[in-house]
Image 1 (cartoon, rainbow, N blue to C red):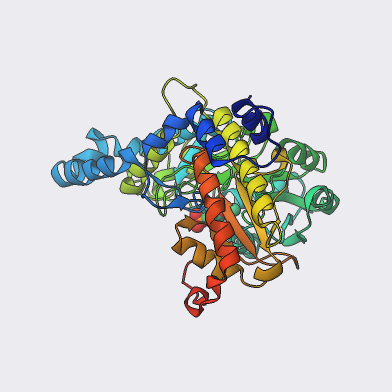
Image 2 (cartoon, rainbow, N blue to C red):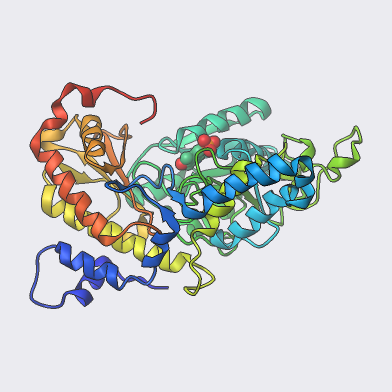
Length: 454
Ligand SMILES: *Cc1c(COP(=O)(O)O)cnc(C)c1O
């Protein structure tokens, strides 16, 4: 795998004489030799916008609009119900799961694509709790983190409300301290360690293999949420020996708003228990119309109701958009190398240009972060994170704002989707950030009006 950092790349593009941060010309030169630069052509991006929010909603692949239109007008409009067979609608969840599997180190037939991440977490966490209790009835505790994505914690509450047990939350702490605190929280009553691989706020990435191994040694199962990982960083669920994983279709997989989510269950567990949402699409014979539930073989038993075909078609285009013919069968190493280079460049430039206003909240070591960079607002802009982000969006740099988890303050969050961002976009974004931070216009009242979605 390529592990070049931005500095290495910069050096090869613009040798010796400079010591300062890269120039715009350096960035143009990097784009010119970018081995996956052509991937950008597979996306439809608005002009005059630098989109640094692909970690929240991925951009539109060029193929999607025509494909969804075809599903609507031909498959639905003309062929109607026959399309369940003739257009392969019924197989869409399996097709999407098999296309996604190699990106997360799963095998064909192991990934179910359905529902939302929240619902899929409900299914796998319920099964994990049943497995743990079957092994040892005293194991009733789910260990997670206070700064896990809220829906994960809310769903855990729901699961525990149904089946009993309790939630033990490790407080938000940086770096190694975080791992140590999680390890210390595992004990003889731990049923499940439930973690999000890349933290949605800080971008910090857990060591999946190490934590899975430690949890197993403590007798616990592990559920990994890959919402901010799938399509962003290489993942190998089998190599990590993970138990369960779930994740999101509309972030780095570019499946469109509300895209179906995915779930993976290790083959050693998949047929041990029924999942709780035992709907007909997870039945062994959905069209036999028999009264009793009998689960399908394998991960298909984790399906529930009728798949959302329009969304499924868009998700299939999103997954396909990450694969560039001729680069390699597995696009993740090249995507990861560029993601590291882009995030390192962004950190260098922000710290050089506006380090007194923005304090890095993401691990500096690229091995410890996902594909996003977050900063705390400090100095002149302390407490103004939200209006600064609104002012930035008006200028065409789209990131987002998240309430801080610690006393360090609120977070300005920037996602870097390597499939469609250029080095020059990073340079131009920092130019605009430096201006917005310095010019004070973010103090205008309109920038402080909160939108429903932030
Ligand atoms: C985005 C995200 C979700 C989204 O859940 P939905 O049910 O699809 O809305 C869940 N968990 C994490 C960690 C996320 O980042």
